[in-house]
Figure 1: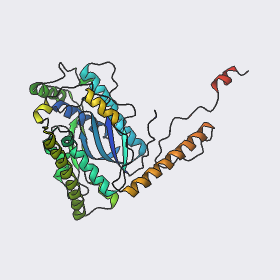
Figure 2: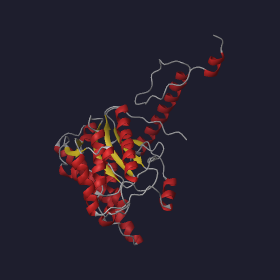
Figure 3: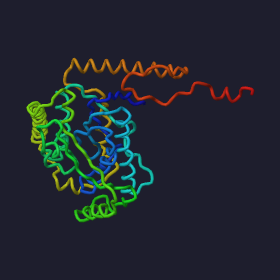
Figure 4: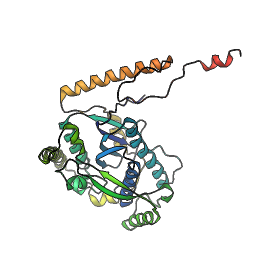
Length: 341
């Protein structure tokens, strides 16, 4: 089954979700935090995208970003997947590893301000909705929550962290899937001793508001207040759900001592089978229908362009935001080989 065609417009706001094939590889240890930040900072070193918000869960990541260019955007998350695959192979001692689900990258277009506010809130409510912690402030995994909270007033707020580059040869196989606090600290110290270079990881949490002409302090504060409102509602819903079922959160200690696993439990596998791929999201029903129609028209135009390519017509103009596929064969190789010279 082919993946949905991706539509990436320069200057557009997108939520990118990358999901692993199985298991919980991205545990909430200090060494994993160093590794994930190192990878993002390394890939982002030449400013492929404007990164606004990020939350790493055990088996997937949510990124809200502004695409500068369609090819640079796909290169951004593609390189993240590639580097993390190599890192996990070294950590687990595997020669071959298919870490990510096939065509797993979901690139969701966010076109209206209310929807962006909701998706940011959803992103930060994810740990609570997964019953890992009660609030995002307690989550020991990698997230941009603290950076976001440092400045909710200025549209050009920028938070920069210097991250030492964890190169693949520096990564040794884990003796055990689960590490103690002392072992965790020792891995980080070894990496820092061997690191010869660092990269700046820049987050601009409010930059997306410029796409909706929000620039003043009052406007930025108002928009972030709406994000906070959505966020409180989502975490409260998760809290009430736990109280009703008598369930408790996993807690910080358990998360920090979780083992790296590359296999699903039956419950996780069943949940994944029910999951749907999303390429358009909007709280506005009319806008959502319009975006779906726009996307279907876009796909039809892309199919037509590819058919013209098959007939050797490379003069056709692909619709804006399209990623060009490999050029198709325009001749029968077998007949060419059998034809007389």
